[in-house]
Amino acid sequence: GNSVTQMEGPVTLSEEAFLTINCTYTATGYPSLFWYVQYPGEGLQLLLKATKADDKGSNKGFEATYRKETTSFHLEKGSVQVSDSAVYFCALRGAAGNKLTFGGGTRVLVKP
Amino acid sequence: GAVVSQHPSRVICKSGTSVKIECRSLDFQATTMFWYRQFPKKSLMLMATSNEGSKATYEQGVEKDKFLINHASLTLSTLTVTSAHPEDSSFYICSRDREGADTQYFGPGTRLTVL
Image (cartoon, rainbow over all chains, first blue to last red; front, side, top):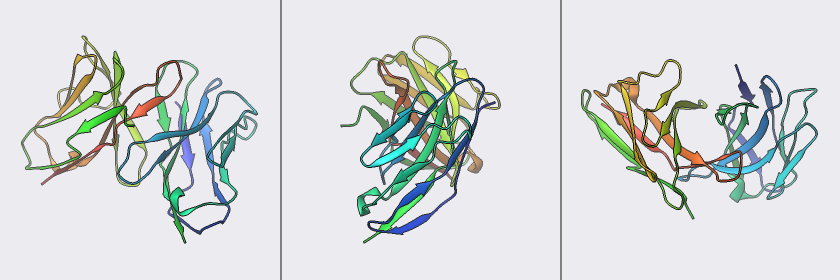
């Protein structure tokens, strides 16, 4: 079956630091890949996505590239802000059906 | 603004009682909604797919008699945890498909604590 593995947190950074959250996946076929963010007290929101190999998703300064050869979709941001403090989830949607499979989530705390 | 709401946001109940959680699609008539469960420091686990006007489709290992799902209208799905026990304590999240896209809108979640 499908699975998603992402680095455990919490990750604590200073403002303007570089952020990387690793995500790898196992799936048959060609899944779509997503990063969701959950801010305190709110529901999960789509941050970015990529639907085929070598696609790069980007939003709010975050980027992730769909790497089929390494089955990875690492999330990066060059300069984080305090407002980026949240829990980040990597997820995939298989080629068939509409179910999402999530990674365990990574809590990020950005200190001023 | 929010497109999926949940009520209540948190609930504490005694062991043996039943608890109902509501999930509303605020701006879209959703024929399909999804229920997830999230354990502390764990991933979201899909429990079931709620289908308007028909029975829910449960994932393997989820007890359908324990977690009753009713999708009576195009804007409301409910999850009832029957005869709750402390091991049912968790964070329950619902979602619906995002129209025209391959992803979902999520509710803010409901934290259930069973004493």
